[in-house]
Image 1 (cartoon, rainbow, N blue to C red):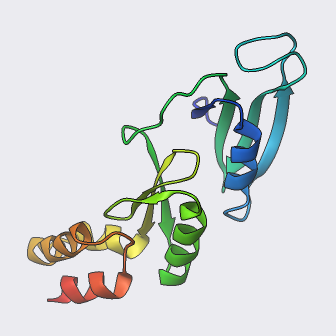
Image 2 (image 1 turned 90 degrees about the vertical axis):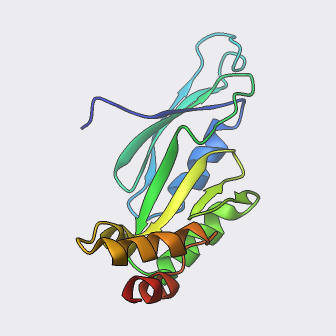
Length: 157
């Protein structure tokens, strides 16, 4: 178990967010719901204060902080996908009520930023042939949702 756990701040919908996130990938789930022992800025005594959960083995905590704190690009979560079907499914699920950005990034309905990335693209970008890697990167820079076939075509020249 890691000693470091990302903590996501929500005004008052930490449990809703955790339930959504744990529905996305197999092997995910809520591990503990902590209710507040007293009134606090995040809610009254007995209200959900924190939710511990994991997404595909990565541990998180969601906190009801009682005030809006905007998430931004400085912290995002990257999901590595095995194929285009997985990219499409995760992209569409996370995008419900959210906003598409660019280069495989999106902001979900809770304001959290995600990168939905095909594993093969990471391999392309790390290729020793820098011309091939640059073509793949150039193609990626023009995309919103990442398209493996288009990336492969650019990579191969």
